[in-house]
Amino acid sequence: MKARDPLLLVAGLLVLWQLAYWAIGEVALRSPWQTVNALAQMVSNPRFTPHLAETLLAFAQGFVIAVAIGLAIGLTLGASRLAGEVAEPVLVAAYSIPKVTLYPIILLLFGIGMPAKVAFGAIHGIVPISLFAMNAVRNIPAIHLRTARVLHLPPLTLAGRILLPAALPEVFTGIRVGFSLTLIGTLLGEMFGAQRGLGFLLMQAMHLHRIESILALTLLLVLIAALANGLLLAIDRRLHQRQQAS
Image 1 (tube, helix red, strand yellow):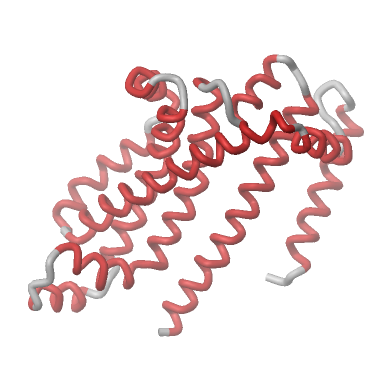
Image 2 (cartoon, rainbow, N blue to C red):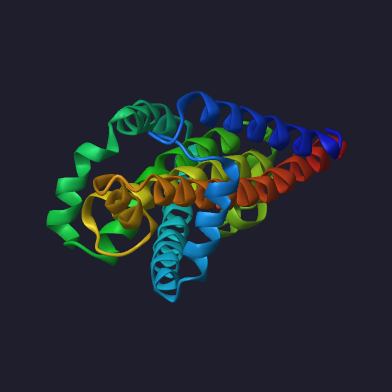
């Protein structure tokens, strides 16, 4: 990918945004410049900082939990072919369940606040990370696993020295997918059952029909997600290139 390609993509999206604004008008849209100006005013407001910090903290905790549990499940099931074949349909079925339907249960367990947001974000990321990790371990050459059994390596040593390094590129792809889904889950949790955070502000703006705030918050979330995913994607590609070269 050439360095100018992302710039051309951004320029094209801005042009389409401006054209849509001219076509729709002030009823349901604002121009890119108006949105950027509204975002600048929002970020400069001291009352905005606690909401941003709340969302980032909830997401960080949920993401760490999702990675830890997801890798533990995926590496364990991947190391045992029978367990993986039995558990994979269960994981896929769990992944297909709309997570919003589980939110009332999350609220009953954790109440309204930070724990519920963290839990709701984590459950969005656990299953995809587990599936990617499990399939990554399955694709490890069988000679590695046979050697580990011959050496009678304990499970933690097997995971840390053989499974995880060999499966790291594909595992990291799962982590990248889990990153996006955990962020979505955290925001949904804030929209439906929180009193602070970017999701709460977005829902509040929707109820009050504040188009400038809706678009400004959406733009901020897009920028955060795009920057983070761009960095993760660059690392992902580097890991895959290194694996192919070795």
